[in-house]
Image (cartoon, rainbow, N blue to C red; front, side):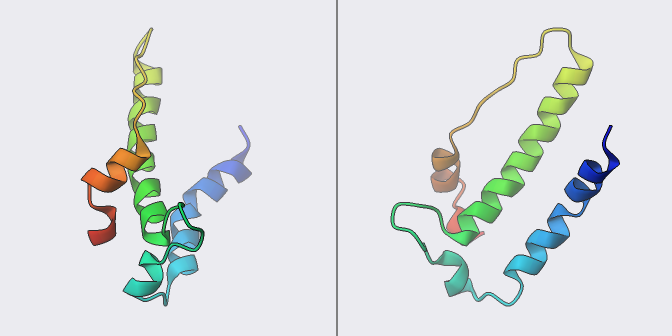
Length: 85
């Protein structure tokens, strides 16, 4: 296994934190491209995806025929109030 990839993954949270450090709440909620996500929504999506993929990895390791559930990121953003988190 490529240890460099693992290190990049392990450092991802810190890189993301550094990328948004200093942004105001208004900055985070701006939608830079009409019809696309705000920075806040992208960050929240990454947090949800992290949890979902961890669960998927566990299923793949532990089960012979795992069911891998999909999700609608737009629905998550709306119903989980990404803009208020």
